[in-house]
Image 1 (tube, rainbow over the protein chains, first blue to last red):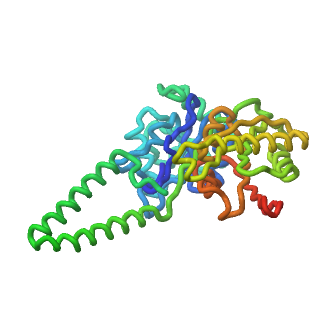
Image 2 (image 1 turned 180 degrees about the vertical axis):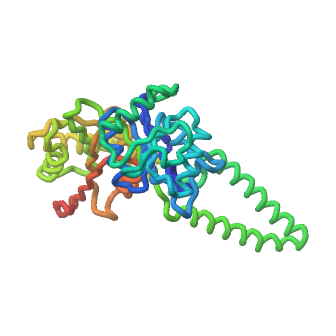
Length: 149
Length: 216
């Protein structure tokens, strides 16, 4: 999610009619790499670095996050250890209830090791492009939210 | 410049704080006489400026990009010709960006207006110059063996880029600008703003038209 000081385009999602995937990744180049994979597969993307330790995510506050609310799927690589990241995941589940959430877990971890919010899909890093695309496609197919709506 | 009010909640908070500040000034004036409100006004103004400047520090950005358009083996390149582009360098950049792919090149020339013509809506001259830049750039690209099409864009280069992306759906953007300090008011910071807003590779070419040289 965007941090409290995040700048947004005047329109959070300027690309109409395309399924929208929000990618949360603290590493900018890694986030852009995931974005490139999903763009090639036909998805509009937004890449957010997530909250810093000194910041809070607007999704967890009263202001909300237009980018998150407009997303059809969220892919979170913020990690599961940091309290700020967990807070963001819980806020997503609470406030964007119809939006599928895919959580990228550290390599080698078993799903049961993680206390992830209910209803999340897990995908292990390093992320394989075909696996990521399939996961997003399946999540979209299961959700009631139509692409680009 | 950053917009301090980016949501209804922020606007509501701003209204409440403004009311509180004016109430404090009025109370001070009532209790201490007409001049007692002046220092309160000063404190409130300095506090508001301090708060605003601190909030703008260390901003992080959400970057977006449209979906890839076209076949999987196609690479779409958007060229923003703020200044006439030299053929060799641009052709080289395009070849590198599209290595191993079929190329689709789209050139957009923003209508770069002066402040005076912006406010008087006298943009005909700027549009004619943009058309000239577009024709020259397309001509040089064709001469270099690169098929391209183009259009005149919005006077704000960033808006022109977004408009082009909606239909063209580029995979990479190449922006040419004047050297720092010599561009128009709208040209300044366009590369920085584009990189802040767009999740796409952006190549920046600086052209010193006076020296006839490519600087980067």
